[in-house]
Length: 80
Image (cartoon, rainbow, N blue to C red; front, side, top):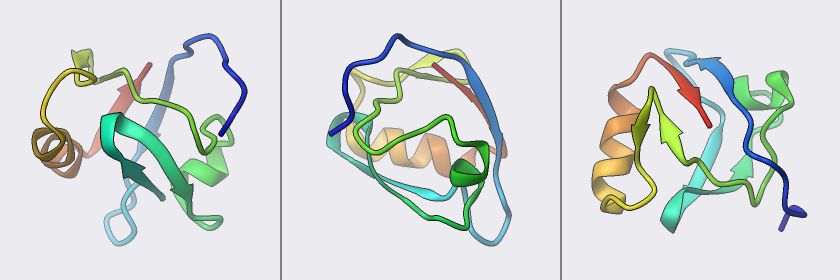
């Protein structure tokens, strides 16, 4: 688990074949990062981080299935 960090904004553009390059656990914790994915190339996301908002939509308190569907439908996202 990562040490606590302040929230930060970043933009990732999904690779059509590989997605964003990370896997999620419940409550939008970043579980793993694919070392060849978009998230690893950006370098701003680490395992243990939490996605609070995606495209200005607060996802943290929504159901996990909704969260996954929302991320799957987005082509680009700004996360906080």
